Image (cartoon, rainbow, N blue to C red; front, side):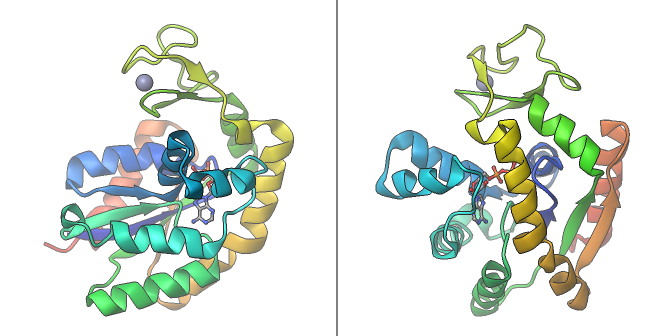
Length: 219
Ligand code: ADP
Ligand code: ZN
């Protein structure tokens, strides 16, 4: 049973690591970024509202994501655990999460903090390409698709996310430092923070993430 938060700057690789972890632990990945992009794609009211914030690299209002997560973690597939990816991102969100978990009578196993240099983050975000169909991510520098511009998994086109444009990237990193980094202290104080060094070869970093998880997983 694992209930974890994958924590890290935009571009740290939360989505990539989550995809590996859910295979092993058979728990759902709860990615607020993916959920919001799905709403945008479907053109829902929530999606339209969220898009105005997302395209500028700003956070969407807390209440929007809090409600989404609240519903999502109560679905049947989440009873045996979940991986939160991209949530919480503000102290308000973290406090709401605490309250939800408390009401559900469950606890977090821990918070994995992906540690990576600013330089690596910048090159990852500028090189990131995503599939318009299945959401798989690639990187033109480090994780090239077999055929340029085409998804290995489903064959659809790859694009650069609008919020991966250079000026928007800097904006997102500044917001991360201001609004999200305070959560490091928040979870350190709860003795839940598990920093994992993720610089260097991907497979080695992934192995360290798995090792950190093994220590916190409860049977
Ligand atoms: P990344 O981790 O690469 O920045 P995400 O896919 O997690 O990207 O999120 C994309 C965008 O969705 C964010 O820039 C923000 O606008 C919005 N978003 C996602 N999660 C949250 C959240 N927990 N709180 C507020 N906004 C969020
Ligand atoms: Zn695809």
